[in-house]
Length: 269
Image 1: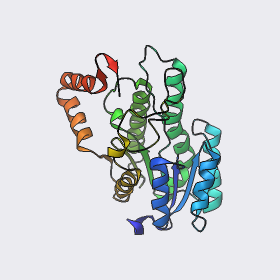
Image 2: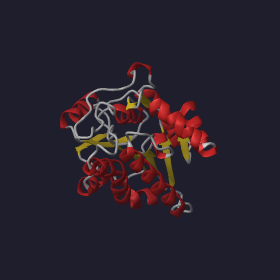
Image 3: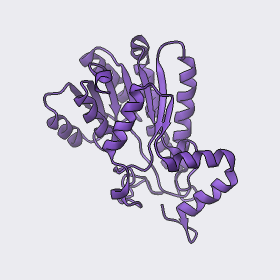
Image 4: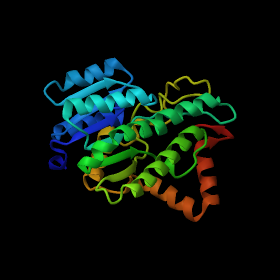
């Protein structure tokens, strides 16, 4: 894997923590030139300070802003000369029933998860085509199967996968690989940062974070899939089972999902 990424220019959005940071660190060790962004300047400063001798470019950016995404691509190109691989990792989740959530919550999730991917891909596309590189979307089983309490998150991941699939066909003869990967539940800050019905961060996780796949394990699987230029990859047996059950027995899948997320009529996960 390390030889594949050596001297390649890789952009990882949302690289200041979690899976994004693990991707950045593994790429740097593999010899890549890495650019990343996040909304927290302090976290980006710590990332930069932890890797002072590596080719790392960081920038404060919100991927829901088209202008921020444009500047990320432009400054990366200025620093490193172009873009070989774009990993659209930045994202946010939500935890609120649709009847309780404001439309602005749905819109915010869509702007970050879907339009963030669209913005960065649009501005990096010419360079990636020139270099016959790779575009990656970090998706979820939520891109295949509706999950209660996450209507906006589902919409964003369904949209991301549809966008990337169409783009893959458009670029099929260009030498560019377009792919999306679907990690299972991974230990990260995403559940703490999930938006509630009021638009505030949830501030806690409903899962046992210690029992989940680590961000480092997830990053290693992701990079291996990129190096093999996969079309798509679903990481866990549980998620594969859910997707196939949804295809073959959708009514039964509805009931299983309901039972997993609800207890005594209340959303618990």
